Image 1: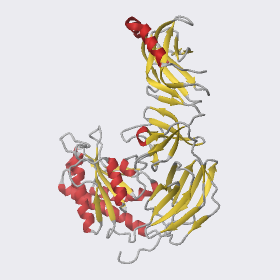
Image 2: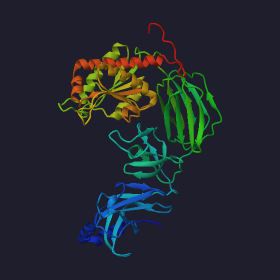
Image 3: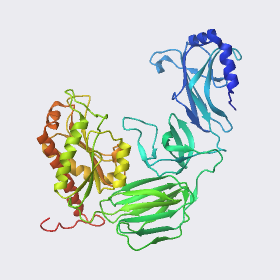
Length: 506
C-alpha cells in the first residue's frame, strides 16, 4: 500500500473546502493529530498512531481510508467522540513529510469533513538508508525519549564525525540503529544528515596496539569507519568495557608494548555478530578516568593513571560554583539566591584546598553566566585530577531538608560518599548519596567527579545555615575533609583492590 499526498492535491482540497467547509469540518472534528503530536519518521514495522476528537457515532478514517475506532467512555474518563487509529508501516509504503489526512465519511466515497495533522510524517525506505554524522564537541546518545529537567537519560558522549544509521524521528530526536535489536536516540542539533545513497556503517576490526607514554595508557583499534560506541566503567574488579556497534572482529593479535602502568591484560569478546566488546582490566581498585575518541578511523581509548601521590598536596581539583549571572538557580522565600551561595561556599572551599597544597581550577570566579556545556569543555581541556560541583537544593515543600551528594558512574561513588559522610558532621540531616545522576557536570568520564547539594535553601532551618558565613566555612572544611578521606581510602587499596597497611605518620 502506498500513501502519497502531492502538494497540489492538498491545496485543491483546502480550496474546495472554503470557509464554510472549514467551519463545517471544525464542527465535526475538534482536534486531529498524530500520537505523539510531533513530526515523525517511521520505518517498516513501526506504528503510526493517531487520535481524533469529534462528534460521537461518526465514521472516521485517516491516511487513505483507514478506519478509526471510537473508544468506549470507560477508556476516556467519560468523554465521547474520541477516536483512535493505528497503522503498521509496510515495506514499499511512501510518505514524504506530509501531514496526515483525517476524514469524517458519509459513505465509502463522500467525506463530510476533512482535517490535517499539524505534525508531518515521513516513511523511510530500508533500501535507501538515511545516514548522519555527529558534530561538535559534546555530541551524545540517549537511551530513549524520556525527558525531565535534566534532559533525557544519556547513554554517553561520542566523538564528532561518527556515522549513525537513522531509522526514525520523533520531534527533535533521531532514532539510530546501533546493532541488531539495539537502538539509541540523538538530538537533531548534534548531528548532520548526509545525502541519501550511503551504506549502513559496518567494519572489521584490525589488530590492536596497547601502549603507554609518560601520562596515559592507550588502546588503539583500527576500523574502516567511525562507528558509534558505548562505554562502562565497572567495579569489583575494576575494568573499562567498551562496546563498538557495527563491528565484527578481525583482530588476530593484541600487541601490549612497554610503558603500561594502569592497563592489565586487555581482551575482546563478540557478544553478537555486530558488536565487538573491548574489555580493559585496570590495575587499581579506584579508576581515575578515561576518554574515547577517533584518530582518523582508529578508535583510541586513553586511560588515566592515579595521581603520583594520593594527597591534596599537588592534586589538581576542578571546582564548579553552580549557576551564576542570569542563571540564578533556586531562590528561597526570603530571597536567598543559589548562585550567590554556591560562589561563596566555592571560594571558601578553594582557600581550604589551596592551604592544603592543591591546585584549584574554577569554572567561574564571579557572578557571571557560564553555560554548563562550556564548563564541561573547560574542565576537559584543563584535565583536573577530580571535579567538585557546588549547589544548594530546593523543594516545593518547605519541610524537606538535608544534604546530599551525587554521582553518575558507580566507579566515582567513593568520592561522593566520602564527602557526604563528612558534610553530615556539620549537623545537617542526610538526604542521601544519589547515583546515576544525569547532570551535565556529572557526565564526563575523564576524571572522578561529585556534585554536592549542600542543603535546601527552600527550608528555613537549612537556609539560615547556608547564609551564615561561619557555616559556609564549616561546609568548605568538611568537603575538603571528605576529599582527604577519599584519597586516604584510595591509598589503602593497592592494585586489584588488595588492602595495604597505611604507613606510620600519614
